[in-house]
Image (cartoon, rainbow, N blue to C red; front, side):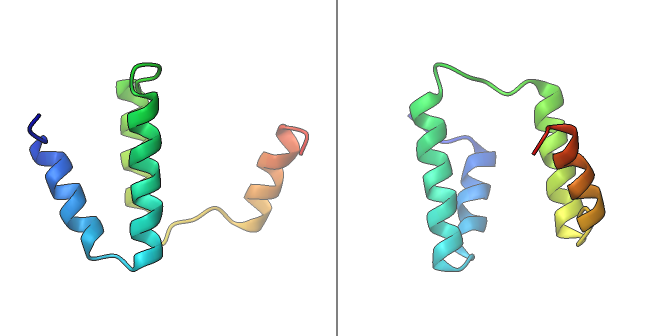
Length: 76
């Protein structure tokens, strides 16, 4: 089976990362492949992932206070 262009771009980008991040990406891909028949992201979830990655790339992260409030909402 041939990889999609987007997957090829992603793999090329991951190759430039430090070893431990490459391992993390590899583990994620393996887990996705194992679960592929069971779960597929919705278009909205994919959009949310892209938004989160863009925010992270800009250094835009939740504050400690925002995270604490989020954990409280879930009783953690």
